Image 1: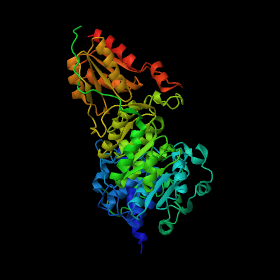
Image 2 (image 1 turned 120 degrees about the vertical axis):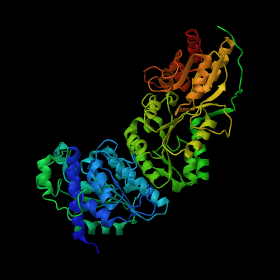
Image 3 (image 1 turned 135 degrees about the vertical axis):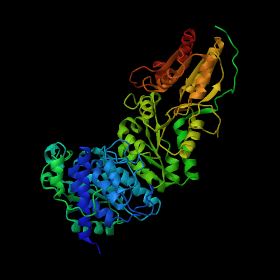
Image 4 (image 1 turned 60 degrees about the vertical axis):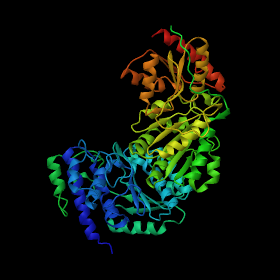
Amino acid sequence: MTDFEHLKRIASQVRRDIVRMVHARQSGHPGGSLGCADLMTLLYFDHLRIKAPAFEMNGLGEDIFFLSNGHISPVFYSVLARKGYFPISELATFRAIESRLQGHPTTHEGLPGVRISSGSLGQGLSVAIGAANAKKLNKDEHLVYVLMGDGEQQEGQVWEAAMYAGSKKTDNLIAMIDYNHKQIDGPVDEVMPLGDLKAKYEAFGWSVFEVDGNQIEALSEQLESCRKNAFHGFPQLILMKTEMGQGVDFMMGTHKWHGVAPNDEQLEKALSQLEETLGDY
Amino acid sequence: MVITENKEMMKFTIQNHKDTRSGFGDGLFELGQDNEKVVALCADLTGSLKMDAFAKAFPERFFQIGIAEANMMGIAAGMTIGGLIPFTGTFANFSTGRVYDQIRQSIAYSGKNVKICASHAGLTLGEDGATHQILEDIGLMRMLPGMTVVVPCDYNQTKAAVKAIAMHNGPVYLRFGRPKVPNFTPADQPFEIGKALVYQEGVDVSILATGHLVWEALEAAEILTEKGIAAEVINVTTIKPLDEATILASLNKTNCVVTAEEHQLFGGLGETIAGMLMQNTPYPMEIVAVKDQFGQSGTPEQLMKHYQLDAAAIVKASEKVVLRK
């Protein structure tokens, strides 16, 4: 049985890592990272069938996760480090020169746990489809997961990939969208409304599920359900309603913390709301 | 000018006329038989890229992506993660400029083992006109860190190159073309990435050519011999990495150079050679390339003549450059 209280404690530490990493360099994207902390913790500490801390690029015999919205690298780096892919102390090098923890995730410096470079948006779904195709050719029945942003849905390549996966029945693929309704310039509905995202993906041949992305129990149930649905002739999408900045009250309900670092005072205020459960790096 | 005797290394004769894209298709098919990790992706140009044989023989390893080149590059990058060796096929225009950021981030920066195979490069695409005649692709691709750029000269060499790039671990751009052109290099030749090939020795001028212009360079050399100029002809099969040793050895002998390519002057073979020479030993140089222009509709022969990318243009450039020594 999944120990949700344990997962929530990990998520709290992951959120501390996020705000501390971004504060240390006065650079990075805390909002989306905080919003996805529950999902990322659940994936890496419960749902994904992975060989961590062992890492091989080919991902044979294990599930594979891709982060397409690479700007939320702080949450990705935190869960990878906490899972043991690389030393937790390395989180202190986030965005520093000669670090493996580049501003956006990359394979270039050989950071274990990362299988593709992302940051320029819209490319991760295609990469995930390719990895899913490779799994089928390799007769590997593990699944491929990809997380995208909601603003990222404005990129045309996403829809090329959505059409492919629906038409070609990429049914070992589970995509997720961090639907916090916010992007850098403001609310998604003002910048470039996405319309009925569920209906759009369904029209492309996907099965689409909606869930609260900050309710870890509901999220877990949905992911398990999707795993059972795999290999049934359709790709799956989880539309996760999330809150940007979740867990830090003054970062919630606004797009202003998309890519802004907290100052010393704001850091202390944020950390006072997030329990240190596993020890800070 | 000292007239010297032209020492021939190998006499090339035309075996037949074949398109380099068929060299790609035939090479890919044979590669598919030898290596089950090889997969092919195409963006609705299977016939044009001559990928039908592979698609028919290995349907489970052939992926029709539709007219969605950005998605194709991403899928190819993802497939490498499972240990596969993806070959993407579409026109050179749609293989580079249209998908530059996808190649840059998902393939080059990510260090993925994708083979970007680009047909219908340059003016010889012909009647479709400038929208499809990319003349900037070599420059775009060679600027990417870690990208290998291979430009074979005829059918036999393209076929050999296809097999060679499969053995190379890393992203590769393979450039070839549409029309039937002289097929003159040996069948079943070995192809070594990064090796420039001296096809004819001479002491008066080095002619460095790539792709379709290599045969034109050999023809130009014959005309130059009659004019008392002994040209050394080198086939630069690989733009990146550049075979600096072979090229510098030739230049140190001839002391002047003409480059010839079916590409824009900016960013192509000529500028590549010029940049290398300026950092070693500068020599007088003439560049036979398209001079900051778009192409237009026409037959391949008409276009190559119009934009002065033929033997006559190479002869003229050679006569000019030897006087600058």
